[in-house]
Structure formats: C-alpha cells, structure tokens
Amino acid sequence: MRKRSLIPILYIAFLMLPIYWLVAMSFKTTGEILSGFSLFPQTFTLDNYRVIFTDPTWYWGYINSIIYVSLNTVISIAVALPAAYAFSRYRFLGDKQLFFWLLTNRMAPAAVFALPFFQLYSSVGLFDTHLAVALAHCLFNIPLAVWILEGFMRGVPKELDETAYVDGYSFPRFFVTIFIPNIKAGVGVAAFFCFMFSWVEMLLAKTLTAVEAKPIAATMTRTASSAGYELGLLAAAGTLTIIPGAIVIYFVRNYIAKGFALGRV
Amino acid sequence: MRTENQKAWFFVLPVLLLVAFNALIPIMTVVNYSVQETFGNNVFFWQGLDWFQQILTSERFHAALGRQFLFTFLILIIEVPLGIIVALSMPRKGVWVPVCLVLMALPMLIPWNVVGSMWNIFALPNIGLLGYFMNDVLGVNYDMTQQPFSAWVTIVVMDVWHWTSLVVLLSYAGLVSIPDAYYQAAKIDGASPWKVFRYIQLPKMKTVLTIAILLRFMDSFNIYTEPFVLTGGGPGNSTTLLSIDLVKIALGQFDLGPAAAMSLIYFAITLLVSWLFYTLMTKDDAQ
Image 1 (cartoon, rainbow over the protein chains, first blue to last red):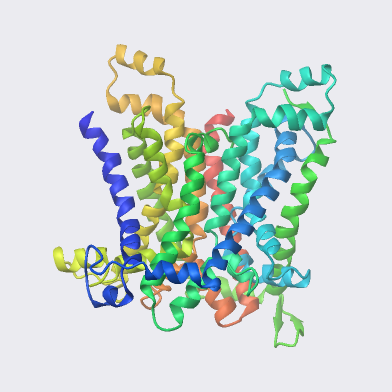
Image 2: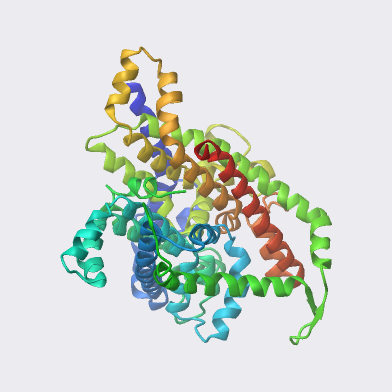
C-alpha cells in the first residue's frame, strides 16, 4: 500500500516543480533572475505584483479575460441546455450526424481559424469586443457542453418529465424549476470545462482583439518583447493567471472526474 | 426509449446557428482562398487545385507533417500509460482524493501561452531550475535553444506535464465506477493483479479511455501556442509542428492560397485519423 501511494506523490511533485519555479521567479527582481541560479528569492520583492495591480493596461488584461470567459460560459450553457435535452430525450432527423458534426469542431486547429475569424468578426463589426471572443470560443465550448450535459440528462429517468406533465407543469416551468435542479452537478461540470477552455485559449482571443478587449496574454507578450525580457514581471503575471482556475476547480472538485465519464462517445 | 419528435430541432436550433456561424463561414473563407491567387487589392484569380498540389508535393509540408506525427505519437505513447498508472495507484476514497484531483488538474487551467513561458524560464540553461539541474548537477549538456534533441525533450515533457492529468482524471472516473463486488469476486478466484487489470479494470475504463485518447490526439495534433512560445519552432525548424508552420506561411509570408490549402489538408487528416481511432475503439461495442 505504501509503495503504491508513492506514484501519485511523485507525479504531483513533478507537476508542482515548474509551478514552484514560476511563483519563485515572481518574487525575484529581473536582475536577480538573469544574474544566475538561486533556488529561493535572495532579495524577496513584491514589486512585480505592485506593477500589475497599479498599471491599468495590466489589470485590465485580467478583467477583459474574465469578462469574455464568463460571457462565453453563460452563452454556451444557455444554448447547450435545450440542445442536450433534445439529444437525450428525442430521436429526430439527422440527430446522430448533427452530434458528430458538433464534435468535429473540436478537431479544427485554432490556427486554421485565426485569419478567417478575424475577417468574419471585423465584417460584422464585432472586432475588439468581449462578445467577439465569447462567441468565437463557442466553437469548441458548445459541443463540449452539449456532450457533458447530454450524459448527465440521460441519467435522469423519463418518468420525471411525464410526472411533471401530469401535474400540469408547462414545459418551460418544468425545465427550469424541476429538470435543471436535478442536473445541477452536470451544469457545474459543463460550466467548469467551458470556463477552463475559454480561459486557457489565447490564440483566437488575441487575434480578435486590439485595445478595448485585450486579454492578459496580449499584455504579457507586449511586455516580453519591449524593454528586453521583464522576466520577473512576466512570472508574476503568469502566477496570477493560475488563480481564477484554481478557485473554480476548488468548487467543482468532487464533480470534475464525473463530468466526462458520463458523457457518450 | 427516446421518442421520435421532429420538433426537437427547435431545441437544437440555437446551438446549430451559433456553431454554424463560427464553423461554416470561416471554413468557406478558407475554401475560397484555397482555390484562388491574389496579388493584393482584393483582386482574385481562379487557381484550381494548384495550391493543393503544391502543398502535397512540398518537402517542407512532408517534414512538418512527419514531425507532427512523431510528436503526437510520443505524446500518446507516454501520456496514456502514465495516466492509467497514476489513476490505478490513487486512493479510491478519503480526504486525499479531492486534494490530489485539484493539484493534478492545476496545469490544465493555466493559459497556454503562460505554460510556454513558464517552461521557457524553467528550462533555460544556467537560470532555469531544469536547465541548471541538467547542466550543473547532472553534467548533461542540455540547451533547448541550441540543440534540436533538447528542444524535443522539452516540448514533449512539457506536454506530458500539461495534459497527462486529463488521462488520469478520466481513467480515475472509470475506475471508481467499478463496484466492489467485482474485486471481491476476483479475490475469491485468486486473480493476479495483472488479470484484475486486464479483465476488470481495463474493460470498465474503455469508454473513458476512448474519450481520453481522442481528446489527446486532437489536441496534440492541433497544438500551437505552447511549443511556439517555448521554442518558436526552433532551433532551426526542428520543432516546427504543423500549426506553427501553417501560421508562418499564412501570417509570416502572407501566402493565403497555400496556407488555406494546407489548412484544409490538415483538417482532413485530423478528421480521418480521429474517425479511424473512433471506429477501431468502438468496433466491439457495435457487435
């Protein structure tokens, strides 16, 4: 038993090493980082974080990212709920083909779509808005949300629907007040995955924005290229990008593993 | 079980419209570029299938495709078994389970460009923890900015670090769904640990493993941001994977026609391989 728990411990240690290094860097000055190797910060500094929290171009990067990620999560879940219900409860013309086609959108490399997306969203006048990024991320998040929610909905017996109709519930009222509370966990898991994939995707987010809705990634690359490498600042900015994800994952920790397991392939 | 109801289409309609807006219009734009030539000013000439022919016969494309397949192959061959091993050795219940799951999921929640930069500063010789350890403690000559082999090791280890947890989480979800009675029966029959794995755990993990392998295939085949930030495709072209090469052609050289043709070939390969995986792995279920 002892020997077996060694494997997860070693694995987690391996995962934590680069993260430790990033966090350690963020408390060093750029001069110290470049001057050579040191396992711990020799001159502990909070300056890197001070810069980020006082410079609007920095902290607005985070705010912009959080705005479009939240917007994307809400849109994805809102449209995926009825669709997943249809897939789990009814057979209709082309349902299997439609389901597979939705999944194929996860297979398209984002690099393929970068340029056409830029043209598309420019032509409809959404370029450099939070909505543009939120809608673009729907490409891969909606299929995922439908996939996860459908799995959870199939676990709810059909008798629930029928009883509700007999009791005189209208469909919208049944759906919102009875059905959705029944698959709370599924909604949580789907929302978590939407949040995660929208938060980590930066190529499209960068392509579709310029100033107003610029994500944190764009701010980071700008700093990296101007004035040499501000490594300490970059590390602090990177450390801060881990926090939103860590908070979200803490809330859904008991459901994450279940999320994909219930989905169908 | 499911009833026939064509009105269900109304439920699917919002999803259909949103995804179609995002998928069909851009892909048609790409198709459009792929058969035309432009010299600027929005003037286009019909080019037929020339770009496709040019890409399919170009050595540069073959080299990038070869590197891409090698990368994806290495990723699958390392991450899938490693993920299964870690999942098997995790405790089934107890206070440590959520702690393990949260810590393991952490790398997946870091933006991809940050993953690239953090591995960059982690692996740099002299100042990075990994670079320092390899060169100054182990005495191995390791420099990912100069040696293609070091660069390859770094991008593969980075991806293992980034995504193995997905396999772990999915396998683990499959494992905890096995009722205790199965293990008790195996114990009574005196089954060896290998037999338990082969005939109880592996079949139960099959569905989730299919999802894991498919997701890992698609995502590693389409990978762009992390290796681009880490190595920029270098040294030389040694880590220029398909997406990196594609962006170089499309945005670096602004050769829209060839880039579009390459996008479509790329997408077709991804679809084809995913479909092959999918049919191979679900073959037994159909019978």
